[in-house]
Image 1 (cartoon, rainbow, N blue to C red):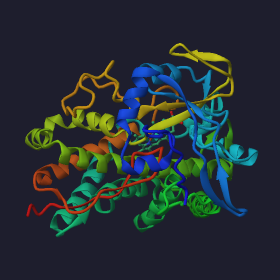
Image 2: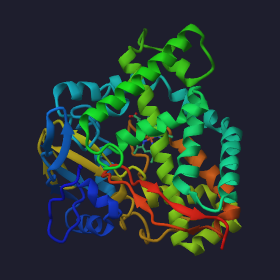
Image 3: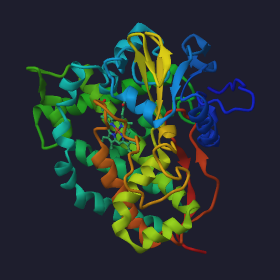
Image 4: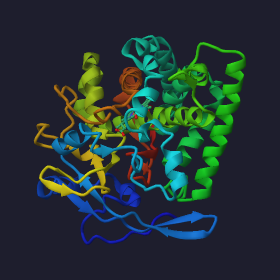
Length: 422
Ligand code: HEM
């Protein structure tokens, strides 16, 4: 429904969600890095469904920042390249009300509001707090792997990669584990907005998903305010920023950001890692033989997969980036997926090297919005790979890899395989 590919000659259209159904267009990103590290990209018109019927929606185009140097430079100047002006997502808010709604999300805020709200939960995500989750993450990963390897055939996405972050999130937030399927569905509808199988470009369905998720969160918040517990839901529902509690709207948005950011991304990191190891058997065998390689392997897989491919900023004054003039109001897109393959920073960037060190990848972003869940994501990926390692050499694909139509996450919807080794 959403797809209406506008031709850009022989080149892949990096802006179009449908491009990514065939994989990340690394060759086009390499060309951009070489020829014009900050280059203007027109946006294709996309069909959307809404109350008014089918509408054609077209963004104004954007500056694509594709080198490591460019992404770092823009990320370090949040006062010039704003997350709040038009939000941090590539698709522009359709109305002023949509923009106002978007600005309730941490990721779409600027200083000083951003720092005040972020402070609310930083303690939950410190390395120490995350280390304390180690045993429960291991128990979940072990159960999932044991079940998957016993099956004749499994789906790496549904049975392993999606399940681990959802179980961990349910524990962290203090939600019933069986409700994780709701979180899965909601985040698929939101992040998969452009994918015909999930959001289908349907604006009303998108809004309905927000509504349902918010109703759910508000009902849990009410329970926690009456009977507080030791969980993140209680913290969010009862904490104060600047002497006042979060409004219901702020609370719901913060909650939803954690739910979506905390499950989609790690899911795609784990799935992408399994695929990368299938494609690179020598690297896989090194990991299987030596689990001290795990920490550097996880960072290399983060670089390799770049689960979030980009975030967007808006220039608030006339400026320049890598020598290219940028006007106030222009949309600027930071392509982490391209920066992570920049040969100016990474030796042999198109080779998977699990021992790579240092590894200054930008998969968690940089600057004030640096990923809050980075320690948690690393812990989950490391744990899953450690549990999978004894079985990895027997893993084989048994069906097609189905990719998500998204220009935002490097996602896989289905990865059928078997650990039986036949
Ligand atoms: C592999 C996994 C993950 C990746 C690749 C990832 C990537 C990112 C990136 C690139 C940003 C920067 C946004 C920006 O600059 O505009 C970000 C922010 C964020 N991430 Fe993650 N993330 C991951 C896992 C998680 C997890 C597990 C959680 C929480 C449970 C989480 C919560 C957040 C939040 C709340 C923000 C917003 C921070 C802010 O705006 O201050 N992420 N993430």
